[in-house]
Image (cartoon, rainbow, N blue to C red):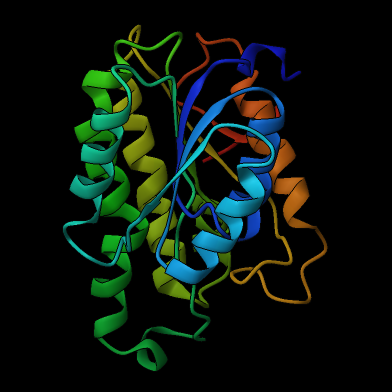
Length: 235
C-alpha cells in the first residue's frame, strides 16, 4: 500500500502529536519526503529528532491560530521544493462544551481560523506547487462529528461540529475547482485517543494514520468525497 509514496513530497500540519505524528512516521518509512508543521517548538524539535532517523523530514514551526501561519508554511515549502505531491491538512482544535451558550461568542471565531480558514489558505497558496506534482492530492482531516446527520442529531460541541461541516463543504468546492488537476478529499480518521478525541475514545492514533495512508492510495480520479480510510461515507 505504501510503495506509491516512495519519493513523494508531502506537507502535513500538526506533525508533532496524534494522527499527524503517526502519519508522519508511516510516510517516512514509505520513503516519502515530509515537511511537518507544529505550534509547540519543544514538541516539534523532539519529534523531528525521531523523524530524521526514519527519513527526510523538515520541521516548520507555525501556529494556525496566527493569521500569518499559512503564508509561513507555504513560503517554507516553496523555498524547499519546486513541486508538491500531497497536502495533509491535519491540524485542528477541539474544546468540548455542551452548547452555544457554554461556548460563548468567542470560540467560533477563534476556532474557525484554525479548523477551516487555515486549511483553505494553505490549499490556495500551495496549488501552484501541487499542480506540478505527481497525481497531487489534498486530504482534509474532518470528523464524523461534522456530518449532516451528526448536526441534526447531536447538538453538543457545536463549534467543532460546524467547523468540520464547513471543512467538508470546502473540500467539495475545492474538488470542483481543481478537478482533473488535484484530487481533494475529506477524511474521518475515527474517534481516537488523542488530545482532541480524549482518553475514552475506542481507537488509537495509529488507526487514523493508517486511514490517512489508505486515502493516499485511492485512485487519483477519486475526488470530492468523504472517506473513513478506504470506505466512502456520507457528508
